[in-house]
Each structure stands twice: as structure tokens, then as C-alpha cells.
Length: 151
Image: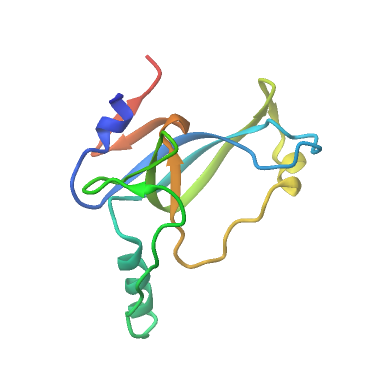
């Protein structure tokens, strides 16, 4: 178990900040194929999707009676915020604010105004849940501690 994974071995729901490096999703024919996005993501880890949706419904004055179906992929590891799928481990998170720090292609920064028109648009759903591959988390702030894969 690496130090990033170990940092999330707490019980309950907590606010965290992730620093991630993820591949930009564009077709191979796109000039930005292979680019990466470095981002800072603030959100909650250890919560339950059904609770988040039901809380949002209740705030809107609706009856909180949402029950999600089974996961479409992967298996949630009971008692943890992790999901396993095809030999990889993912951190399940309810992101609340994401800030793109920069885009990089072949080791060079790419201006936002050049790359962003080529990217998928974000979700307009009120409750968004994301699964981050542990390998894509380069650092995290958990329980006030900053944990980095860097030495």
C-alpha cells in the first residue's frame, strides 16, 4: 500500500484536496492527443452517492427517495472509498470544485484557449461522482496533512 492509498484509510466522510495528472480525452486524430491535465480537485471522500442525491432532493423540497442501481463497472471495496477494476484501484470522490492548473503536451505547456475548445464539456448534473485512478493522484491533502508521491 503506497502513502497516497494509506492516507485514505479513514472511516467516514471527509473533505480532501487531490492534485491529479490525467490524460485529456480527445480522438487520436486530434492535435492534442496525448496531452495531460494537471488539476486541483476539492471534494468529499468516503460518502455515499445515494445520500448526496437524497440530500440534494430534500434541499429542493422533493421527497428523498433515490436508490441507485448497481455500479456499472468495478467493485467497491467495503468499508473504504476504493473501487477495484481490472487490477487497478480507484478512489471514489464527490468533487465540489476543480481547478485546472495547466495542460501539458510532450513536456510543454499548452495554452488553455488552444486546447479547451477540443475537450468534452463537463456534466451539468447536480451531483457528480468521480473515480480517480490512484496512479493519477500525484499528491493529496487529507486531514490537514500534505502527502506527495514526490520525494
